Length: 142
Image (cartoon, rainbow, N blue to C red; front, side, top):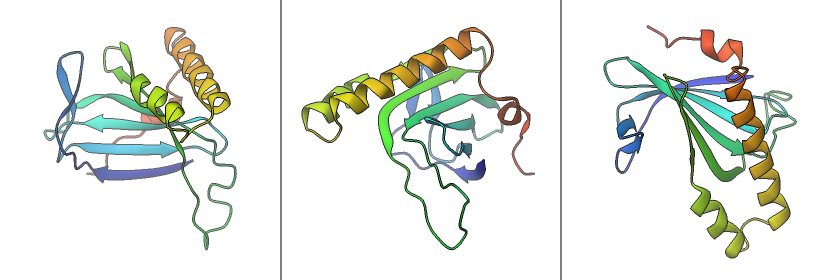
């Protein structure tokens, strides 16, 4: 797992459930896993209040951290998922996925795989098996 802490820069605030979940100056701790179909951002507002998790559906990264002298490529598959601090979830960017297929940026087969992976995450949320324990335990640097 690769963990990155960074401040966000957005062109406009992003909202979910009527609340701002991401804006310039907010903090994110990103978790990128070897061979998983998602990454996770743990989001905090400017005052340090934890807001929830933002998940990108991505192509798995099989060589993550395998060779420190090389870079790895993350391929975002357009679908995203917001999980609030209250464990409510919202599927995001389905329109972006459809547009990517229409413009042939993504194959229909890969779009189906992205949807299937998102559905797996939704079931894991419902059964309280997501996000992973190590993500829940890590807090921002002081």
